[in-house]
Length: 485
Image (cartoon, rainbow, N blue to C red; front, side, top):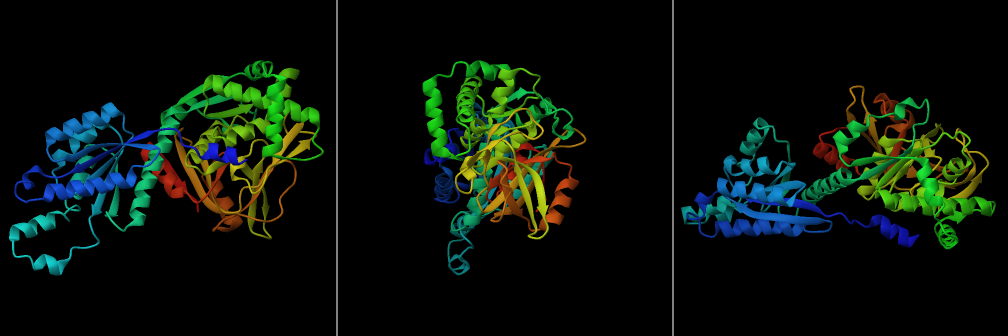
């Protein structure tokens, strides 16, 4: 399991972040050392953000419109996903606008003072008025921000702000890190290949979605797949591959003794076939459902899919059952934030302990499980074709976040978010994922408020409270975000 967790945590995508400091070239000849001092501040910004998986494109201190045009061209050429606009001192809005207009990516204005306050006593003790002005200008970062905001608004350029200090301000740098992480996730979604295998669960109207709207909001690519393709890959699986996968099952899962060897072997074959299907189409996520019409090969493949789906989900390729495409997107977002992203729905309400039981049959995110995930035999998959083995797990007992991608009445998508705590206690040992969640609103209050926004009955759950990151992702994607609690 340790190796799987390492793979799950690994970030391989590189996201380019544009960094641009701004100043006014007229100052440099007037105030000795000011430019170098501000460039040093810009170096601190780059030093604080230059971590994986980010590649920093720093255009330096832009102090003239000509340099702004050059900066914008470079940002566009390099394909940056986000611009961090560091305001070092007063600068003309005309020095900023050409760069962001050419780059055409979201902008975060960094309004960062070099220190908590000017040392007024030392400052006022200075005898050289010119030197005093230069010292003041090194703290003058807040001055042009209203001007820049005014121009951005009038030009229709979306922007966001981080206000704080260059040094000794962890909250400020955490906010900047969250903006960068949101840009990373947006980039993941823009490049993600989502496979859709089979068809919708007939009559489950809430999960139907407009695929073009998925492209509009998230980008990426959607590949429509047939169950027969999975079956075809199953026929190429060798006995050696099957044996190795069975060994992996015994390592990763807590396989219960009443699981039939035949069912486990079918699950191993399908798991290997899934890996081959994912590799063939370069998928980053998958949604599936198959009703079944008597085609035994197809029905056997789908009935034996759960363990393979769980392995994929734990390794950064989330799988959503019941063809829930919106929830495959939500799971991918949660996983890309490093929070996991397990498929879930309301199971029952426990008014005695004031918790909501949530889970699902089908895939679970092994990397966020409380203990080892059990594999149990099921004589019937309720409401679905087939029987076989399934997973039973609870999400780690810790803070969690729920995310739903909601399709509104006007066809637009929005994010619905709630923060909760996964708590210990009895669960339903029915061979499904199942957890107990406690909400600040109480079970009754949460359910009423969550449902009032009309989400589908599925959502994604991940560990940690990450609503602020999702809110920033929504801002970058220009999507509405509603936080229930």
